[in-house]
Length: 463
Image 1 (tube, rainbow, N blue to C red):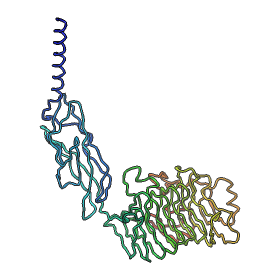
Image 2 (cartoon, helix red, strand yellow; image 1 turned 120 degrees about the vertical axis):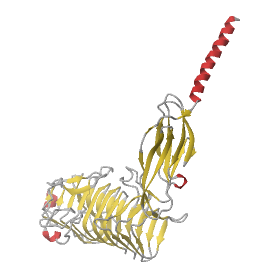
Image 3 (cartoon, rainbow, N blue to C red; image 1 turned 45 degrees about the vertical axis):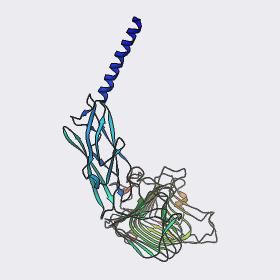
């Protein structure tokens, strides 16, 4: 009997201690001291109107030895804010009486959903955290861009524009799936405009239609992914291509094309390129097929296959261009240039393929490849004059080739930074290509890609 009595009393005492511990843990008092915060400012990636951002997190820490209650967590702009907050499953803009156990923490989840805005803007708000010690502020900032969306109708794969259209930099242009310029229409894109693409999206200029990109040195036109989160904002394969189809015309000046599968596909079209930069493509920078292309100050780097690939004939001339390929993300040997008719049906004559004052280089021992197994009945004319070329395997093959004149082989071009993140192919102070250009070609392209006048002797390449 005594044993049972002692056991009952012991169990009762244990229960009281347990109950006391639980009550202490559940006995919340109004927070006296400021909380420790994981951030005092949160920068959101650039976001377009009417799209949600990713969810960001703010962590609050209770360093006290007792459980507390946070009187309020709110947004300065209240219900009119573009930001949403969530605390313990409760949605803001005002969340009150939030419990937080001693030596514990909780997350405030934050997202941005911009409503209609009149112009691009830097949008900001504050999270206000109230304690007896005062108000703590966490600043929220994002660049919001006013966007127009091109979304095909349900069950359709392309959005078609059949009238002359001008895009300017007051808006961002967002392409989903495929946008086609048709019916002999013209798309004109003015300086400073941004064109964003969803995954697997593309811009197509169809037969008889035209593309005019009027960027300037100071205000380039940008073609890129709609994702602004690193590293996706600089990686390849984030969208498809810009394609100029048979019979179309393009004039592209001062543009950056980055992060797609093929930067430009030019198929039996007539295109002029000036001050164009193409980076980080999973296949080719330019894939040209039986087209007419004139390129001045073109820079291409980091393509999984080839920076400039020419096939099925055509007529081409490039002056003061930098064709590099330091890609290391594919299983094929990266090339700066490929000219071929091999194994291609419906071959056409290559009537002209000329390069003057250019640079060809990259990771591979041989940066260029010219296919000799073409149809002997077709013209296959090419000529290289005064170019820097990386070609380490049997350089005599090119030295003894009458189609190469004044070539400089296997010198380090001395680029600033060839990485896919930076792509700065300008020349350092001691770069070998400095002062190696022929005046006849510099006179044709009297300013370099950054708008500086070329003086004789000029540099090879676009810079």
